[in-house]
Length: 274
Image (tube, rainbow, N blue to C red; front, side, top):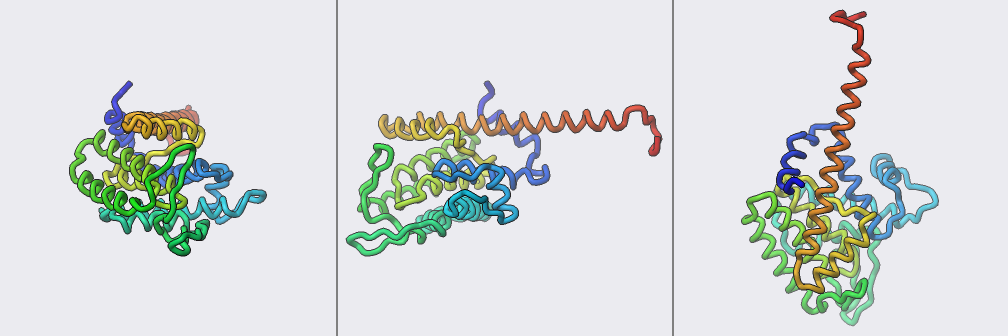
């Protein structure tokens, strides 16, 4: 098996960003899989139609369509920020979550007053998910500030593809483990991962919906062992899966295109007409 750096270099050598609509359809796939992990029932084709033509699928909860649209807007936001080398400070993290939860965020009643989850506000209560308990709400702001400070520092240090990917995967793990918001933590953390990858002009990672159980298991194992290796290993596998699938599909499509062209040109000699 080639190293992740070799696979990335091979992928980039194909210049898929010059292929018509490739990046756009890749973005749709990211949104589809990430939203599906959080409960969206839209198919990949329904996701594409919604984002391209505004067609809301019948028989599906409106909330799922809103989730998908907001996720797409948030993805475009982080990609634009990465192209401008925006500093990923605490306000930037809140902005990602606010965009993710813009249409579906609930209002939570707390002893500190109402917390509108659509505004990117930190939670004011303790939360658990899947048997995991997250950082005490009183420590959320200090932990998230430290996360942002460390990320900014490490962005300037990571100078190899492997280091850059490891930073993106670790940031994903750290932010979702802090769980700073009432909702949208998974999507926000995956978008932060994509921001870092785009910052370095790397292909964007997808966490596949069919691997949801393994994804959660890797998160839990890393927390239990207090070691990010299980999660980083899982994300490396997801990243390789995406890149290898994309390259395989591209090469198959190019082979079919060449074969079709040869059949069209068979027997024509050098004439433009016969």
